[in-house]
Amino acid sequence: MKNIIFIAPPAAGKGTVSDFLVSNYNYEHISTGDLLREEIKSGSSLGKEIDNIISKGGLVSDEFMIKLMEEKLAKLDKNKAFILDGFPRTIKQAEKLDEMLITNKVTNNIVIYLDISLDDALGRVMGRVICPKCKRSYNLTNEKLKPIKDNICDNCGVELEKRSDDTEETFKVRFDSYLENTRPILDYYKDKGILKWVDATMNIDNMFQIIVNEAKND
Image (cartoon, rainbow, N blue to C red; front, side):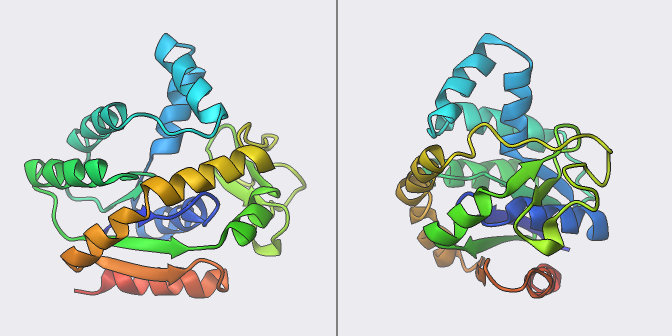
């Protein structure tokens, strides 16, 4: 299976698709959002600074995100396919990621763009909840993505939570930040010939199958 770099606006379904790939194809899931939230929960001064930025819908600096990713990639099992969820988000990050992959002798990569409109994404985010323990994401407005037991994680049996940055006002800021900073890197990867475009609003089982087929192709 190929390594997958997901590029998508908030609430496009990166977490849901990643969970599926981890469970069924033994992928290593690297979520920059989870890494940042872990830093926030640590209570460090850096965590507090990150929390202030994210709570306002902003993006953490390229320099910090690149350092975070360098440390993570250096520790990866080279024999296991991985997913990058939330990185890169800028041209600078994309260029640095190429350097990191070469340094770590990581090949066989594919970039998948999950396409979704602001209205569709906003509708999803209003019903999104996550498990504070395993980070699995659910959606109360989608029958296929609801937990088996109301507001309880299927995996951990703990109560699900609403993300603090999942408000309509903050979400729109995050979506606009995505448009400004992230969309230009689509051309970057298109020129490299490794970009695949997937409609994130299609039936979720169909979306899973399309992504698996892309990841399997030589």
